[in-house]
Length: 100
Length: 334
Length: 183
Image (cartoon, rainbow over the protein chains, first blue to last red):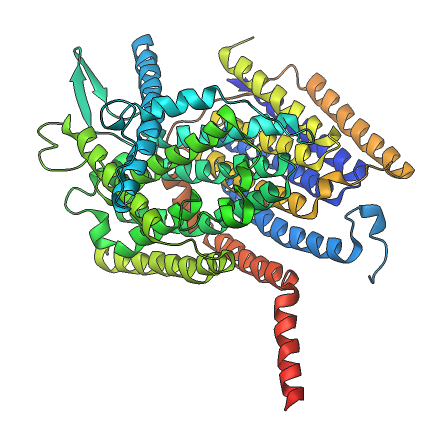
């Protein structure tokens, strides 16, 4: 019995926090976490409308988003460890050259 | 959802927590006694008859110890970490059934806290978040040994969680349900351990690694890491880590009994439901004995071997087991 | 209209917002990761309210239990929590401000214009979103996407292993070269 606007509003706030984090933070790991927060905002919308229309498809989409997010994090963190090994830093402002 | 129902849930929850914490105290005594017997000693026998008051004495000793917090530690997380370790250990057994139902004070009381249709997934979820306490304890101590212990524990637990999950899927496939009550009930004709011995073995090994029990207790290998992630902890905070470790032992015994050893099922349990908890208790005691026996017998394995074993032996075996089970189930079930 | 449902939602929504902001503002990467874990766990509770128990527990297992543990592991491994927190670039800040304002304006507009016609989300029946229902449509209607995600996971695993292969592989190759030179 909760108005659907509340969920949409909450999702927007989460998404804005995510965007702000991506643009403001310089620690690449925190940028990555902000991306996950944005994923989560989208997932919340999917589940909300799945409940609203009583359609399971929304929940399954969330399942797929989570799987792809897990794959993305595995590769992304491996990349970050490699970048740290060569540059000794994960400040995104210093990732400005192609070679080492 | 009336008042009596809520009261029943509250009483059952409190009872469960009391049993787990009380069980923790006596599992420490049980372990010391069994270890002593295996090493031809007598074990603690001073406090009370046969040493039954030893856990109380230990508890009182730990309460009066000084609590030290390292100066360079992250105070907040340092305090939070033991709590984060104990809570998952306490709540994981909420979905394990103790029996069918008994009539008490004119009410039919079901002998389980929660029969949810995603019980096995709940077990996986709680297992996966129980890593935080240990990882954070290691990091927040600001001690190189502790951090190494925390990192090792994290890597080890993530690696063995996969094999554990695949081993837990097998009973779910056999029973056709994720509810632990359904899984136990479907073991009425034959226990799953006789149909799926490999899955049980994988579950047992992976669970030992998951709770950092020997021979997989690398995170606290005292010869190389002093005491691992809880090097800097003392007093009641240390007691909480200790408690979590032993409660996890009870929990994996209970879950393993329910998934593979028929849970509360045994002779005459249909006629006399009150026998259910007794059978579960006996099975848990036997599994705990095996765990202690392994600790007394096997040396700790090397860390790289541990990771190799997890990824190159246990994980493919578990995957293969799930695959074969699926094929056979389709061929047999049609 | 303060029903019980709305109050429960309000409490959890506050936790979600506070933890999102906490992640955004905390200087220490470990704290940021922990705030995000809290955020994910609270969103899982919202999923439970929305009748998605399976998704809620998958959220805890995958996001809180695996992804964030991996983040924590990498932060601890690299010691990245102690990195100096420098000032963000100027134009980034303006873009961030712009985006934030645009979205907040959208939110305000949305709440003002739609305020008259509130559609309520009811908690669906218990069977909706149960593992059996999810599994049925996952393996029948959405079998192809399911296989594709499986393929993506395999590719990601191979990629991650290749990226972090490290010295072990090269080292072995080098010793082989040395051995062949000896002959």
